[in-house]
Structure formats: structure tokens, C-alpha cells
Amino acid sequence: MTDSTTNSLALYQPVSGDFAPAIREESVEQISRPSLSYWQDAWLRLKKNTRAIVSLVIILLLAVFTLIGPLVWRVDPALQDLNQVSQSPSLPKTATLTEPMSSWQGVRVKIDPGAPDAYPEDFSDRAGFRLADDDPTTQRVRLIWEPVEGVRGYNIYRNNRLPDGFNDLGLPLGSTFANEVSYEDRLSLEAREYYYAVVPTDGFDEYETFAQLKVTPTLTLTLEEALERDLISAADNLKPGDQVTLRFHPLGTDYLGRDMLARLMEGASVSLFIGIFAPLLFVLGGIIYGGIAGYIGGQLDVLLMRFADFVVALPFLLFMILFKIAFGIGPGESGILPMLIALILLGWPATARLVRGQVLQIREKGYIEAASLLGARNYYLIFRHIIPNTMGVILVTLTFSVPAAIFTEAFLSFIGMGVAPPTPSWGSMCNEGVKTMLSHPHELIFPAMFISVTVLAFNLLGDGLAEALDSKMRARE
Picture (spheres, rainbow, N blue to C red):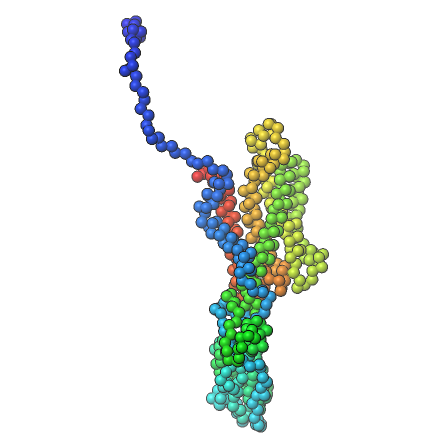
């Protein structure tokens, strides 16, 4: 810079017009993310997971079904409705009042069977197989037929469907002599189609021909039975021939006529109690055990973890049997208490390992060291920093432990080691339903469906919680 330039700058005097105030924009857009806590952010990410939210809704509905359902559906789960045994789900049914059962002597003829000249080739044309009256009911079905020469007796069969042939006649009901040409069926009749068959015999073997009859009994109930079951009252002044509404069973009944809906509600209270109460206790025990091992460390950590490995190696089913013997619970008796004790004593190592691993990571963080240098005591570090930062793992572990416990209860009850009849649980109901699954599949389908839906809902919710509570997922977003 030359001397002339320096002199000109020194002689220059600024005036007010040389400087103007900066123009400030009146509207400035501010973009900032609202401050969210860890749990608020986790909840927002959980709501984006459709499967987890649907699973959460299903779990809440199961809670309503278990807790509020029995208050709405006031049906005794142990009450047996013998007029509706193994009934499929249906709308409300009505029955016709009838007179009390009267004895029937049947039809007898005088006939000398003698020795048959030839076996009848087509018995159906000569039998005249028919009903003794025009009013078959669920109390009795009376059948008669015409005698045939050369026949020494008859066998009677009943099938729930149209037989395919001689070898598919169904349930054998009984036999009669040659002079007895009638039969009265009282065996567990329902208001459905039956196919009766009568087969002639020579006293030893059956002829390969039969007569067939289709019968649909009417659902009936005596006046005395209706009064005993509180379906009517004496003040109604009903008489035989009048209609009476039977108890409504929306999900049908089991093999003893007990309401399936009421038993599913009571079974839910048993299954969910075991499936939630036991995990709460052994997860809590695992938190304390693993937290102590991870925070203290050293030789104590090694010793505690080796004991946890030893517990993992113990066979659960063997201890379940030993606990049943120790409590004096014999075959056919419910083993709810031994099951709870076995789950609690043998289920905590998995949680302890997870919590220990989390504590080992957290205690090395910088904010833990800073708080310790500032004089924070151990209980403050544990309850203020360590436990809150392990809650995500704890919640996910608990969510996965519940379906495992529910499935364990269902399996033990299914094989007769857990909840035993008449106390209902979903597992014991499946055990009972297997016996009739071919003829009445609803007795197995409903409890199995509840087990499957509950286990699936808790597993999907656990997956959603694991993603929502993962801090690394937040960093990726």
C-alpha cells in the first residue's frame, strides 16, 4: 500500500449514509425435532410395527376374555347338559316336552326258524324295516321289521352317515332272536340323521345282506327334567307337546355336555395365571441374580455363572415328577403348584445371563464412571442408571418367557402331568378333545386355537419390543 493511499484513508470521514441496517426477514422457518424420552421414542417406533400392535390388541382382548368374560357369561363350567352332549357350535335350540319314558315290550312273533334252505340274497326287500311309531325322539327310537323264515336272529347297527356297504354299517347296537322283530335304541341319541341297519344271522354268522332305514329323532325333554334343569318353572303351566328353549352354547359342548365357552374362560384364567405369574417370578429372580453377578464381577461373577450353567443342565420334566411326588400328588390330580415351582426354580438362568451381559456393558460406560467420581453410591448407580438401561432387555425377555410358560403348561397338561380334569386349562381341554377329534373336532380346535393365538401374539409383541427398544435402530433412522 502506497503512502498516498494511506493518507487518503486517514483523511476519509464516514457519514451516516454509508452504513445501513441489515434487513431481517420477518419469518424464519425453524426445523427441529421435538425432544423425546427413550420410552416415548420406543412407543412411537412400536406403533409403526403393525404386527406388534395387532398382537398387543389380541393380548388385551384375551385379558378382557379372561377377567370380564365370566362376569358376562354366567354359566357354570362344571354344569353338565346331558341333552346337548358334544354339540357343535350352533344357535339356541328348542326341545319338545314329552311324557316320561315308558317301557316297551317290543314285537314278538311265533316262528320256527328251522334250518335255512338257502341264505336270503336280498333281505332289504323282505324285511319291511320301519319305525314302530311316527315320532322318533332323542329319548328313544323304536324299530320293527318283518320276520323271515330260516333266520335265527338279527343284528342291529347305527351309523351317523350313509353306509358305503356291508362293512360300513357303523356302531353295533345289539342282537335279537328270531322271534324278536323289534329293537328300541336309547343310546346317546341326538337330533341328527341316523342310518339304522338290521342284518339277519344264522345264529353264528351274518348274512351279507341288510335292510336300511334313515331316521331323524326330534329333540325332546320330559317335564321333570326341564324343571330340574331350571329351564322352566312350575308357574309356566307347560304340558307335553309345548316347546322349551334349551341353554345356549355358542361354542358347543364337550363330551359331558359342559359349555365350551365357560370352560375356555376358566381355562384361560388357569393357563394365563401360570403363563404370567411364573415368568414374573423367575425373570425377577434372574434380574437380581444377573445384576449382582455383573455389577460385582470378579470371582463371585464366575462362581454365580457356573451355578447358573448347572441349573440349565437340570432336566425340567424329571424335577416336575419329583416335585409331584414330594407334594403327594398322585395320578389324575392337578399339579399346578409343582409346575409353578419347577418353572420358577429352573427358568431364571436365561434372564440372569442376559441381564449380566447388559450390566457388564453399562458399568463400563463413561457416565457411570463420571457419576462414581462425583461420589454416587452403588445403590444410586444401580437404580438410577443400570436398571433403567436394562429395562428394554428385561421387557423383551419377559414377553418371550410368557408364551414359553404357556406352552409348557399346555404340554404338561396334555400328557397328564399338569392340570388334570375336572379343572379346565387349555392343555387339559386339548387332551380331552383328542379323544373325540374325529367325531367332534370343535372340542380340540377351540382350546388349541387359543393356545396358538396367545403364543403367537406374545412372540410377535416380543419381536416388536426388541426392535422398538433397540437404541441402534434409532441411530439408523
